[in-house]
Length: 282
Image (cartoon, rainbow, N blue to C red; front, top):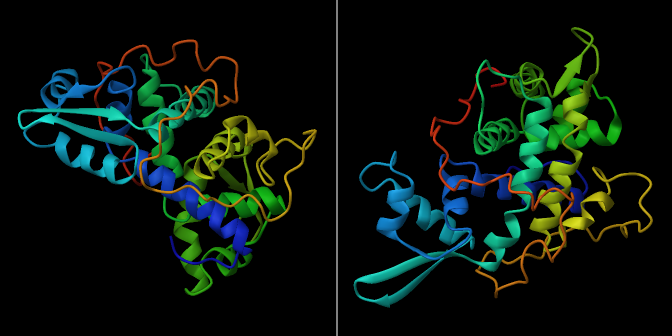
């Protein structure tokens, strides 16, 4: 992510959330994580669960998730290799239902049913638009801001009118709104609704329990009993695979319904591409 004019601790927080989104947004990555959530699987067993992947399409995804420290590889023998979630990967799973909950509430409703994992994929695509995270951060902090202010803060090294394409995209996606040309921009209800999503992503990236999402200095709830100390919400999370953690639900979940089986199928039956860049909200 390019350097911004945000305060260093905020810039680091935004960068880590953006990096986390970059780990899981690429097509099918979420489904790979879900397929591995309950057991170790061999490559052929994974391909059996994800039959829409052709040829060697699965291998680069496993490699990328391994490089991110989310998936581990165990070589039992020359011809016996299994893949599994690392502690980091397991701890990330409770973030996905939070994203799905936001999508179910705020994304446009299609004519037919949409699986939970597809909701997650569509939401992730919106959140990984270029410059989306820092723009949303600034608007959440300031309540409203001009395009010039946003440009000077989010992309200080570029020509300020370059902020208009990402702003127009965020308006089209329904996350940001403005009263007209030359008027300030502000978050919509769906933009404000991202609070818990960004909170849990930030908490995970910082190596904190997900229950700390409500204490986030920007996206947290204002009535928390334990305020976050200034300058401490910075990631110290290593990208290397971490030692096994306690089960994710023991490390803290932001909602009581995360264990209710939102992801009851590792490979849902609608393996369509996630929302294409520049497209409508769904």
